[in-house]
Image (cartoon, rainbow, N blue to C red):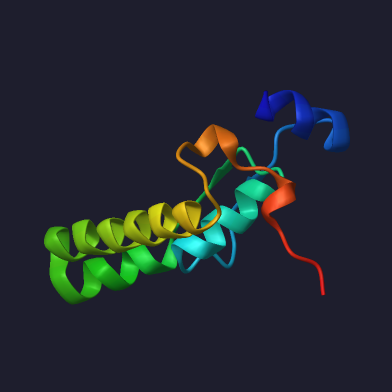
Length: 89
C-alpha cells in the first residue's frame, strides 16, 4: 500500500538518505511517504565510539525511539504510518 501511494505522488519510490538522527526522524520520513530511510552518521558514531557493540546500541536506541513515537501516535505497525500523524503549525 505504501508503494502505491508513494509512486502516485512522485512517480518512483522515495528513500531518505540525509538528516536521520533519531527514531522520530524515521517516523516523519515514513509518514511523508518514504519507503525506507538510510542511517549513516549515527551508525558511524556508534562504530567509532564502541565498535560493533556501539552500532548495536545505536540501532537499539533508534528502534526504541521509533516504537515509542509510534505508540504515542496510537500505531502498532509500520504499515499504519501515514501523513495523518503529522501536525501542521
